[in-house]
Length: 116
Image (cartoon, rainbow, N blue to C red; front, top):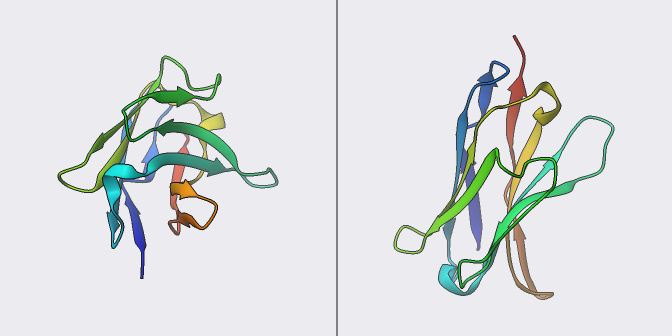
């Protein structure tokens, strides 16, 4: 059974930083596009950042210049470095692994709260 396990969430002050990690198991990690999504209370889940198997990255406009997605194929792990955090970044952050429509997996999420 495929597992994606997020970690690194918690409370941060505005302007602070957090680093999320997502460890994947039971998939050929290197061929998957890995993504970070978030869902704030009362809002739909949205893409935050993604990184393809070739290392190409994509970011939501709201996080460009503040967040960085990276991957370590040797460790089967994807990261999201979040800097200059804002209260509006508060959400549950989910890890996603996508290869095709039949191979699309989600983690259970990790809560990020940005408050002073």
